Length: 241
Image (cartoon, rainbow, N blue to C red; front, side, top):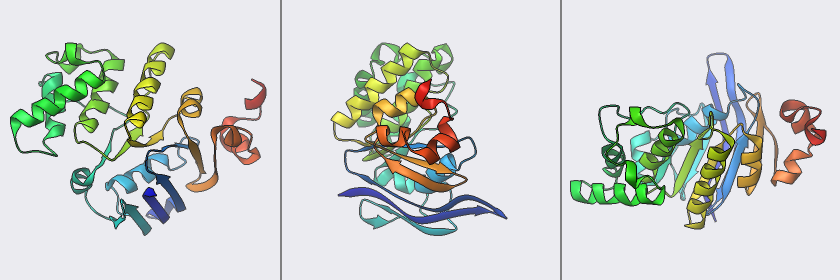
């Protein structure tokens, strides 16, 4: 059963078509990767799903409900959470308090929110940093904090927008393991990522878009061999590099 269905979604900004008649679906418990060149419309598609943009045309169906045009905070309470490319934690609040803010999406009680936040920090191996301020964290830990705030909302669907950008190879491997752990716990994940070895290792399937339009969908090994994908994104020498 599909948890998310994007049906013929188009997003225009004046004369610019950022997303062009895009359709895709994500089954429960699946990791779906979204790739494409810079400016292909990936983040715009994410923003339509997450409620930041109201699509010009088409529908977003989440957990069986038409949620097209609903606001991000309403979608969050229904179980759809996302991270952002540029992490912006509350600088004057501790790691624990940052994550607790996310947990208030599912409870009004401070004690329960802090309990949920601690559970998430333990899951991400960040419990020992609960009293640190974000400014004292490494880039890798700030990325984990961004994931933690989203997880504290107890999502059914987690949208990850380039959470591995700027990380060292060993740190990328750590995030890959975190995402796999989340999927093993039953979470459905929709991920944008430019680090090809990561997206190939993680995804059950990959959708490729170019100029806002879907040009391919398939398993990672199929996508890597698709002629249109190689020309548009991976490069002519991808298979021989």
